[in-house]
Length: 304
Image 1 (tube, one colour):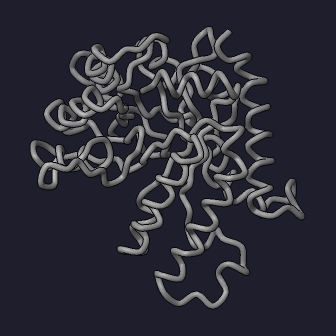
Image 2 (cartoon, rainbow, N blue to C red; image 1 turned 120 degrees about the vertical axis):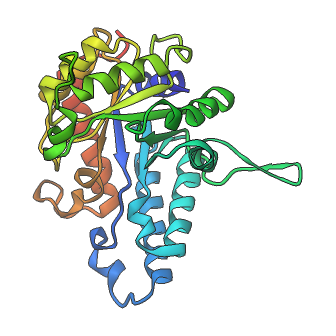
């Protein structure tokens, strides 16, 4: 699965992932006026997402759909999540479901089935939320990840395991030193590399990837050197404060090795002075073009 994502990145010369972390408050005033029900809100969210997808699908390889932004609107919100995932896939985009699932045993298997597998109903295989990849939390250990890896192999899917997250307080736990001298995030990275050793594609990267925040470039550089076969999902660019120079270390000598997420910086671009006068979808496209130029200008030609 990661090979197909890499090929999309090379084709478009763009390692940008558009984060559809769509909150009702992010919508233009005219889309929010008079709303008083979840059902009404969700119709606007779906329209907003679809219009952005239509405007960017030819220039970016992927979108990341953060489920929490939809769960807050209850059952109706999950319908918007479902519509967004399916519509993005229909427009040829690689879809990352950002759900950060974790548990053990049968519960982990159910989570995996929901996003990476299918459910058998009287002999018929039905899919719930057909994402290409899913973010997962590996800090419960190997038995919490095993069901996801099983579906990765069986269904040609992928996962991104939390390793070094972009939030400011991530170091409270993730940077703790173990008796071996390595940090907790380094140990998690080593586990991810090992979990993915049987899922390596033709570009040298595994379908078992890692979430590595751009806001911690020193740690990211260390992980890039240690995890030779692990593809990175890189949050933190834009609104969280990271820039292209900070995340350059996440990529290898071919300009491969990661995809960079930007959520508010794209879907809320219409609110910025740089894109004044543009509609939200047009501004999102312009922001994607600017981000592509920034990233490739720093990383260099991708797939060289």
